[in-house]
Image 1 (cartoon, one colour):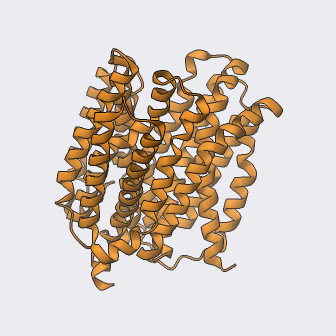
Image 2: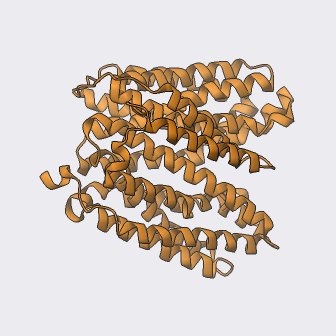
Length: 441
Protein backbone atom coordinates (compact mmCIF):
# COMPACT_ATOMS: atom_id res chain seq x y z
CA UNK A 1 0.00 0.00 0.00
CA UNK A 2 1.19 3.53 -0.74
CA UNK A 3 1.37 6.25 1.92
CA UNK A 4 -1.92 7.82 0.82
CA UNK A 5 -3.73 4.50 1.41
CA UNK A 6 -2.26 4.23 4.91
CA UNK A 7 -3.45 7.75 5.67
CA UNK A 8 -6.93 6.97 4.34
CA UNK A 9 -7.09 3.93 6.62
CA UNK A 10 -6.11 6.18 9.51
CA UNK A 11 -8.96 8.56 8.67
CA UNK A 12 -11.41 5.67 8.33
CA UNK A 13 -10.40 4.31 11.73
CA UNK A 14 -10.76 7.82 13.21
CA UNK A 15 -14.33 7.96 11.92
CA UNK A 16 -14.96 4.44 13.25
CA UNK A 17 -13.88 5.45 16.78
CA UNK A 18 -16.28 8.41 16.82
CA UNK A 19 -19.19 6.46 15.36
CA UNK A 20 -18.79 3.46 17.68
CA UNK A 21 -18.46 5.66 20.78
CA UNK A 22 -21.76 7.41 20.07
CA UNK A 23 -23.67 4.18 19.52
CA UNK A 24 -22.07 2.07 22.25
CA UNK A 25 -22.61 4.72 24.92
CA UNK A 26 -26.35 4.83 24.27
CA UNK A 27 -26.55 1.09 25.02
CA UNK A 28 -24.15 0.89 27.97
CA UNK A 29 -24.90 4.12 29.86
CA UNK A 30 -27.78 2.70 32.02
CA UNK A 31 -25.47 -0.07 33.28
CA UNK A 32 -22.71 2.44 34.01
CA UNK A 33 -25.08 4.53 36.14
CA UNK A 34 -26.21 1.45 38.08
CA UNK A 35 -22.60 0.60 38.84
CA UNK A 36 -21.29 4.07 39.70
CA UNK A 37 -24.46 5.65 41.08
CA UNK A 38 -25.18 9.35 40.61
CA UNK A 39 -28.31 9.12 38.47
CA UNK A 40 -28.68 12.91 38.69
CA UNK A 41 -25.54 13.20 36.51
CA UNK A 42 -26.75 10.74 33.87
CA UNK A 43 -27.52 13.35 31.17
CA UNK A 44 -24.16 15.03 31.74
CA UNK A 45 -22.34 11.98 30.37
CA UNK A 46 -23.64 13.09 26.98
CA UNK A 47 -23.97 16.86 27.51
CA UNK A 48 -20.32 17.43 28.52
CA UNK A 49 -19.10 15.36 25.58
CA UNK A 50 -21.36 17.30 23.20
CA UNK A 51 -20.21 20.68 24.52
CA UNK A 52 -16.49 19.83 24.39
CA UNK A 53 -16.66 18.21 20.95
CA UNK A 54 -18.68 21.09 19.48
CA UNK A 55 -16.94 24.24 20.73
CA UNK A 56 -13.44 22.97 19.90
CA UNK A 57 -14.21 22.24 16.23
CA UNK A 58 -13.35 25.77 14.95
CA UNK A 59 -10.21 25.89 17.14
CA UNK A 60 -8.83 22.68 15.63
CA UNK A 61 -9.57 24.04 12.16
CA UNK A 62 -7.72 27.27 12.96
CA UNK A 63 -4.72 25.43 14.43
CA UNK A 64 -4.57 23.10 11.42
CA UNK A 65 -4.26 26.11 9.11
CA UNK A 66 -1.28 27.32 11.15
CA UNK A 67 0.61 24.17 12.13
CA UNK A 68 -0.66 21.41 9.82
CA UNK A 69 -3.47 18.85 9.85
CA UNK A 70 -1.41 15.75 10.70
CA UNK A 71 0.03 17.09 13.95
CA UNK A 72 -3.32 18.23 15.30
CA UNK A 73 -5.21 15.12 14.23
CA UNK A 74 -2.66 13.00 16.11
CA UNK A 75 -3.10 15.29 19.14
CA UNK A 76 -6.90 14.99 18.86
CA UNK A 77 -6.77 11.18 18.63
CA UNK A 78 -4.30 11.12 21.52
CA UNK A 79 -6.61 13.27 23.67
CA UNK A 80 -9.56 11.05 22.84
CA UNK A 81 -7.58 7.90 23.69
CA UNK A 82 -6.32 9.34 27.00
CA UNK A 83 -9.89 10.40 27.81
CA UNK A 84 -11.05 6.85 27.04
CA UNK A 85 -8.47 5.35 29.42
CA UNK A 86 -9.53 7.75 32.18
CA UNK A 87 -13.22 7.00 31.57
CA UNK A 88 -12.51 3.28 31.84
CA UNK A 89 -10.74 3.84 35.19
CA UNK A 90 -13.43 6.18 36.61
CA UNK A 91 -14.84 5.18 40.01
CA UNK A 92 -17.54 7.83 40.30
CA UNK A 93 -20.03 9.57 38.03
CA UNK A 94 -18.35 12.93 38.70
CA UNK A 95 -15.02 11.56 37.48
CA UNK A 96 -16.67 9.94 34.45
CA UNK A 97 -18.35 13.21 33.45
CA UNK A 98 -15.02 15.08 33.69
CA UNK A 99 -13.18 12.43 31.67
CA UNK A 100 -15.96 12.40 29.05
CA UNK A 101 -15.11 16.08 28.62
CA UNK A 102 -11.50 15.11 27.87
CA UNK A 103 -12.79 12.60 25.31
CA UNK A 104 -14.95 15.31 23.78
CA UNK A 105 -12.01 17.69 23.44
CA UNK A 106 -10.29 15.11 21.25
CA UNK A 107 -13.45 14.24 19.33
CA UNK A 108 -13.80 17.93 18.39
CA UNK A 109 -10.77 17.60 16.14
CA UNK A 110 -11.09 14.06 14.82
CA UNK A 111 -13.88 14.35 12.26
CA UNK A 112 -13.23 17.88 10.91
CA UNK A 113 -9.49 17.30 10.56
CA UNK A 114 -10.16 14.00 8.77
CA UNK A 115 -12.35 15.84 6.27
CA UNK A 116 -9.74 18.58 5.84
CA UNK A 117 -7.00 16.01 5.10
CA UNK A 118 -9.28 14.33 2.56
CA UNK A 119 -9.64 17.76 0.92
CA UNK A 120 -5.85 18.15 0.84
CA UNK A 121 -5.15 14.67 -0.55
CA UNK A 122 -7.89 13.97 -3.08
CA UNK A 123 -9.42 15.64 -6.10
CA UNK A 124 -13.01 16.89 -6.07
CA UNK A 125 -14.16 13.85 -8.09
CA UNK A 126 -12.82 11.37 -5.52
CA UNK A 127 -13.94 13.18 -2.37
CA UNK A 128 -17.60 12.24 -2.79
CA UNK A 129 -16.70 8.53 -2.93
CA UNK A 130 -14.55 8.82 0.18
CA UNK A 131 -17.31 10.62 2.07
CA UNK A 132 -19.62 7.77 1.06
CA UNK A 133 -17.18 5.38 2.75
CA UNK A 134 -17.30 7.49 5.92
CA UNK A 135 -21.11 7.52 5.75
CA UNK A 136 -21.22 3.73 5.48
CA UNK A 137 -19.07 3.51 8.62
CA UNK A 138 -21.70 5.49 10.55
CA UNK A 139 -24.42 3.23 9.13
CA UNK A 140 -22.58 0.03 10.09
CA UNK A 141 -21.77 1.46 13.54
CA UNK A 142 -25.45 2.19 14.19
CA UNK A 143 -26.03 -1.58 13.99
CA UNK A 144 -22.75 -2.93 15.38
CA UNK A 145 -22.43 -0.33 18.17
CA UNK A 146 -25.41 -1.42 20.28
CA UNK A 147 -24.43 -5.09 19.82
CA UNK A 148 -20.87 -4.38 20.97
CA UNK A 149 -22.19 -2.31 23.87
CA UNK A 150 -24.36 -5.21 25.02
CA UNK A 151 -21.47 -7.67 24.61
CA UNK A 152 -19.03 -5.60 26.68
CA UNK A 153 -21.58 -5.03 29.44
CA UNK A 154 -22.77 -8.66 29.65
CA UNK A 155 -19.63 -10.68 28.79
CA UNK A 156 -16.85 -8.42 30.08
CA UNK A 157 -17.39 -5.13 31.90
CA UNK A 158 -18.68 -1.71 30.85
CA UNK A 159 -15.13 -0.38 31.22
CA UNK A 160 -14.20 -2.15 27.97
CA UNK A 161 -16.42 0.21 25.95
CA UNK A 162 -13.67 2.76 26.69
CA UNK A 163 -10.60 0.49 26.74
CA UNK A 164 -11.40 -0.79 23.24
CA UNK A 165 -10.45 2.69 21.98
CA UNK A 166 -6.82 2.23 23.08
CA UNK A 167 -5.69 -0.17 20.30
CA UNK A 168 -7.88 1.64 17.78
CA UNK A 169 -6.32 4.99 18.72
CA UNK A 170 -2.79 3.58 18.46
CA UNK A 171 -3.58 2.05 15.05
CA UNK A 172 -4.88 5.42 13.84
CA UNK A 173 -1.72 7.26 14.87
CA UNK A 174 0.53 4.60 13.25
CA UNK A 175 -1.39 4.98 9.97
CA UNK A 176 -0.97 8.77 10.05
CA UNK A 177 2.79 8.82 10.77
CA UNK A 178 3.91 8.22 7.12
CA UNK A 179 1.81 11.19 5.92
CA UNK A 180 3.94 14.06 4.59
CA UNK A 181 2.06 17.32 4.18
CA UNK A 182 2.92 19.39 1.11
CA UNK A 183 0.98 22.52 2.02
CA UNK A 184 2.99 25.37 3.55
CA UNK A 185 1.36 26.54 6.77
CA UNK A 186 1.71 30.07 8.12
CA UNK A 187 2.04 30.54 11.86
CA UNK A 188 0.00 33.44 13.17
CA UNK A 189 -1.40 34.95 16.34
CA UNK A 190 -4.36 33.05 17.83
CA UNK A 191 -7.08 35.15 19.39
CA UNK A 192 -7.66 33.01 22.50
CA UNK A 193 -9.76 35.78 24.06
CA UNK A 194 -12.15 35.56 21.12
CA UNK A 195 -12.16 31.76 21.29
CA UNK A 196 -13.00 31.86 25.02
CA UNK A 197 -15.88 34.31 24.48
CA UNK A 198 -17.14 32.30 21.53
CA UNK A 199 -16.92 28.97 23.38
CA UNK A 200 -18.68 30.21 26.52
CA UNK A 201 -21.48 31.80 24.48
CA UNK A 202 -22.06 28.71 22.35
CA UNK A 203 -21.88 26.47 25.45
CA UNK A 204 -24.63 28.52 27.10
CA UNK A 205 -26.82 28.23 24.01
CA UNK A 206 -26.21 24.48 23.74
CA UNK A 207 -26.97 24.00 27.44
CA UNK A 208 -30.30 25.75 26.82
CA UNK A 209 -31.30 22.72 24.73
CA UNK A 210 -30.66 20.34 27.64
CA UNK A 211 -32.14 22.10 30.69
CA UNK A 212 -35.72 22.56 31.90
CA UNK A 213 -35.44 26.37 32.29
CA UNK A 214 -33.44 27.55 29.28
CA UNK A 215 -34.23 31.29 29.24
CA UNK A 216 -31.20 32.50 31.22
CA UNK A 217 -28.87 30.30 29.16
CA UNK A 218 -30.30 31.74 25.93
CA UNK A 219 -29.96 35.32 27.20
CA UNK A 220 -26.40 34.69 28.44
CA UNK A 221 -25.39 33.04 25.18
CA UNK A 222 -26.93 35.78 23.04
CA UNK A 223 -25.26 38.57 25.05
CA UNK A 224 -21.97 36.67 24.88
CA UNK A 225 -22.14 36.47 21.08
CA UNK A 226 -22.86 40.21 20.85
CA UNK A 227 -19.83 40.94 23.07
CA UNK A 228 -17.78 38.49 20.96
CA UNK A 229 -18.77 40.33 17.75
CA UNK A 230 -17.92 43.75 19.25
CA UNK A 231 -14.55 42.58 20.57
CA UNK A 232 -13.63 40.82 17.32
CA UNK A 233 -14.32 43.95 15.26
CA UNK A 234 -11.34 45.61 16.96
CA UNK A 235 -9.11 42.53 16.77
CA UNK A 236 -6.35 42.60 14.16
CA UNK A 237 -6.38 38.78 13.82
CA UNK A 238 -9.87 37.66 14.90
CA UNK A 239 -10.58 34.05 15.87
CA UNK A 240 -13.02 33.76 12.94
CA UNK A 241 -11.34 35.53 9.98
CA UNK A 242 -13.32 38.33 8.34
CA UNK A 243 -12.67 36.67 4.97
CA UNK A 244 -15.01 33.84 6.02
CA UNK A 245 -17.92 36.27 6.07
CA UNK A 246 -16.90 38.40 3.09
CA UNK A 247 -16.58 35.31 0.88
CA UNK A 248 -20.09 34.87 -0.59
CA UNK A 249 -19.56 31.20 -1.40
CA UNK A 250 -18.50 30.26 2.13
CA UNK A 251 -21.03 32.48 3.90
CA UNK A 252 -24.06 31.37 1.86
CA UNK A 253 -23.07 27.69 1.90
CA UNK A 254 -22.61 27.73 5.68
CA UNK A 255 -25.90 29.54 6.22
CA UNK A 256 -27.61 26.96 4.01
CA UNK A 257 -26.12 24.01 5.96
CA UNK A 258 -27.05 25.57 9.31
CA UNK A 259 -30.72 25.94 8.28
CA UNK A 260 -30.68 22.55 6.55
CA UNK A 261 -29.59 20.81 9.75
CA UNK A 262 -32.44 22.55 11.59
CA UNK A 263 -34.89 20.84 9.25
CA UNK A 264 -35.22 17.13 8.46
CA UNK A 265 -31.72 16.06 9.51
CA UNK A 266 -32.84 15.63 13.13
CA UNK A 267 -36.09 13.77 12.44
CA UNK A 268 -34.26 10.41 12.29
CA UNK A 269 -33.82 10.66 16.08
CA UNK A 270 -37.58 10.31 16.55
CA UNK A 271 -38.71 7.95 13.79
CA UNK A 272 -37.74 4.76 15.72
CA UNK A 273 -39.57 6.16 18.78
CA UNK A 274 -42.65 6.83 16.65
CA UNK A 275 -42.61 3.27 15.25
CA UNK A 276 -42.16 1.74 18.71
CA UNK A 277 -44.79 3.82 20.48
CA UNK A 278 -47.21 4.53 17.64
CA UNK A 279 -47.05 1.22 15.74
CA UNK A 280 -45.89 -1.03 18.62
CA UNK A 281 -42.94 -2.19 16.55
CA UNK A 282 -39.94 -4.04 17.99
CA UNK A 283 -36.80 -2.10 18.89
CA UNK A 284 -34.81 -4.02 16.27
CA UNK A 285 -37.24 -3.42 13.40
CA UNK A 286 -37.78 0.24 14.30
CA UNK A 287 -34.04 0.82 14.41
CA UNK A 288 -33.53 -0.96 11.11
CA UNK A 289 -35.58 1.76 9.37
CA UNK A 290 -32.58 4.09 9.71
CA UNK A 291 -30.63 1.91 7.28
CA UNK A 292 -32.78 3.52 4.60
CA UNK A 293 -31.19 6.91 5.28
CA UNK A 294 -27.69 5.41 5.33
CA UNK A 295 -28.33 3.59 2.04
CA UNK A 296 -29.63 6.73 0.33
CA UNK A 297 -26.76 8.74 1.82
CA UNK A 298 -24.16 6.53 0.12
CA UNK A 299 -25.88 6.82 -3.27
CA UNK A 300 -26.12 10.60 -2.87
CA UNK A 301 -22.56 11.31 -1.73
CA UNK A 302 -20.66 8.90 -4.02
CA UNK A 303 -21.15 10.81 -7.33
CA UNK A 304 -21.15 14.28 -5.69
CA UNK A 305 -17.61 15.16 -6.78
CA UNK A 306 -18.24 14.29 -10.44
CA UNK A 307 -21.54 16.14 -10.42
CA UNK A 308 -19.89 19.30 -9.03
CA UNK A 309 -17.52 19.33 -12.01
CA UNK A 310 -20.42 18.76 -14.41
CA UNK A 311 -23.25 20.82 -12.92
CA UNK A 312 -21.67 23.23 -10.40
CA UNK A 313 -22.61 23.80 -6.75
CA UNK A 314 -25.73 25.92 -7.15
CA UNK A 315 -27.68 23.40 -9.25
CA UNK A 316 -26.88 20.56 -6.86
CA UNK A 317 -27.93 22.59 -3.81
CA UNK A 318 -31.22 23.42 -5.56
CA UNK A 319 -31.88 19.78 -6.52
CA UNK A 320 -30.92 18.43 -3.09
CA UNK A 321 -33.06 20.92 -1.17
CA UNK A 322 -36.04 20.30 -3.49
CA UNK A 323 -35.75 16.53 -2.99
CA UNK A 324 -35.63 17.02 0.79
CA UNK A 325 -38.66 19.32 0.77
CA UNK A 326 -40.77 17.06 -1.48
CA UNK A 327 -39.95 13.89 0.48
CA UNK A 328 -40.56 15.88 3.69
CA UNK A 329 -43.96 16.99 2.41
CA UNK A 330 -44.86 13.34 1.80
CA UNK A 331 -43.83 12.46 5.36
CA UNK A 332 -45.90 15.31 6.78
CA UNK A 333 -49.04 14.45 4.78
CA UNK A 334 -48.99 10.65 4.96
CA UNK A 335 -46.94 9.59 8.01
CA UNK A 336 -50.00 8.16 9.79
CA UNK A 337 -50.88 5.94 6.82
CA UNK A 338 -47.49 4.88 5.48
CA UNK A 339 -46.56 1.20 5.49
CA UNK A 340 -43.10 0.23 6.72
CA UNK A 341 -41.77 -0.27 3.18
CA UNK A 342 -43.20 3.02 1.91
CA UNK A 343 -41.64 4.85 4.85
CA UNK A 344 -38.36 3.05 4.10
CA UNK A 345 -38.55 4.21 0.46
CA UNK A 346 -39.25 7.86 1.33
CA UNK A 347 -36.44 7.93 3.90
CA UNK A 348 -34.07 6.42 1.31
CA UNK A 349 -34.89 9.29 -1.04
CA UNK A 350 -34.35 11.76 1.79
CA UNK A 351 -31.08 10.04 2.70
CA UNK A 352 -29.98 10.54 -0.91
CA UNK A 353 -30.47 14.31 -0.58
CA UNK A 354 -28.68 14.30 2.81
CA UNK A 355 -25.66 12.53 1.31
CA UNK A 356 -25.57 14.76 -1.75
CA UNK A 357 -25.83 18.04 0.17
CA UNK A 358 -23.43 17.12 2.97
CA UNK A 359 -20.80 16.01 0.44
CA UNK A 360 -21.31 19.07 -1.78
CA UNK A 361 -21.37 21.35 1.28
CA UNK A 362 -18.07 19.98 2.62
CA UNK A 363 -16.37 20.28 -0.77
CA UNK A 364 -17.76 23.80 -1.24
CA UNK A 365 -16.39 24.89 2.17
CA UNK A 366 -12.95 23.73 1.03
CA UNK A 367 -12.97 24.92 -2.57
CA UNK A 368 -14.49 28.38 -1.99
CA UNK A 369 -11.80 29.04 0.65
CA UNK A 370 -8.25 30.23 0.08
CA UNK A 371 -5.55 27.74 1.11
CA UNK A 372 -4.65 29.56 4.34
CA UNK A 373 -8.24 29.38 5.68
CA UNK A 374 -9.34 26.02 4.26
CA UNK A 375 -9.11 24.34 7.68
CA UNK A 376 -11.16 26.92 9.60
CA UNK A 377 -13.67 27.11 6.72
CA UNK A 378 -14.26 23.33 6.72
CA UNK A 379 -14.41 23.08 10.51
CA UNK A 380 -16.74 26.09 10.79
CA UNK A 381 -19.25 24.40 8.52
CA UNK A 382 -19.10 21.19 10.57
CA UNK A 383 -19.53 23.30 13.71
CA UNK A 384 -22.63 25.01 12.27
CA UNK A 385 -24.05 21.62 11.26
CA UNK A 386 -23.67 20.43 14.85
CA UNK A 387 -25.37 23.57 16.16
CA UNK A 388 -28.24 23.23 13.69
CA UNK A 389 -28.74 19.55 14.47
CA UNK A 390 -28.56 20.09 18.26
CA UNK A 391 -31.07 22.96 18.25
CA UNK A 392 -33.31 21.18 15.76
CA UNK A 393 -33.45 17.97 17.78
CA UNK A 394 -34.11 19.89 21.02
CA UNK A 395 -37.03 21.81 19.47
CA UNK A 396 -38.40 18.63 17.88
CA UNK A 397 -38.27 16.89 21.26
CA UNK A 398 -40.44 19.63 22.76
CA UNK A 399 -42.87 19.49 19.81
CA UNK A 400 -43.33 15.72 19.94
CA UNK A 401 -43.89 15.80 23.70
CA UNK A 402 -46.55 18.52 23.36
CA UNK A 403 -48.59 16.47 20.86
CA UNK A 404 -51.81 14.81 22.10
CA UNK A 405 -50.56 11.52 20.63
CA UNK A 406 -47.19 10.29 19.39
CA UNK A 407 -48.56 10.30 15.81
CA UNK A 408 -49.81 13.90 16.07
CA UNK A 409 -46.53 14.97 17.67
CA UNK A 410 -44.54 13.34 14.88
CA UNK A 411 -46.64 15.06 12.24
CA UNK A 412 -45.98 18.41 13.95
CA UNK A 413 -42.26 17.62 13.91
CA UNK A 414 -42.44 17.06 10.16
CA UNK A 415 -44.31 20.36 9.74
CA UNK A 416 -41.57 22.19 11.66
CA UNK A 417 -38.90 20.51 9.51
CA UNK A 418 -40.83 21.24 6.31
CA UNK A 419 -40.94 24.98 7.04
CA UNK A 420 -37.15 25.13 7.40
CA UNK A 421 -36.61 22.91 4.35
CA UNK A 422 -38.59 25.40 2.25
CA UNK A 423 -36.22 28.09 3.55
CA UNK A 424 -33.24 26.04 2.30
CA UNK A 425 -34.85 25.76 -1.14
CA UNK A 426 -34.94 29.58 -1.31
CA UNK A 427 -31.37 29.90 0.01
CA UNK A 428 -30.05 27.43 -2.57
CA UNK A 429 -30.71 29.88 -5.41
CA UNK A 430 -28.20 32.35 -3.90
CA UNK A 431 -25.23 29.96 -3.73
CA UNK A 432 -22.51 30.60 -6.38
CA UNK A 433 -22.45 28.10 -9.23
CA UNK A 434 -18.73 27.35 -9.14
CA UNK A 435 -15.50 27.88 -7.24
CA UNK A 436 -12.26 28.87 -8.95
CA UNK A 437 -10.96 25.30 -8.76
CA UNK A 438 -14.00 23.96 -10.62
CA UNK A 439 -13.58 26.64 -13.30
CA UNK A 440 -9.95 25.66 -13.72
CA UNK A 441 -10.89 21.98 -13.95
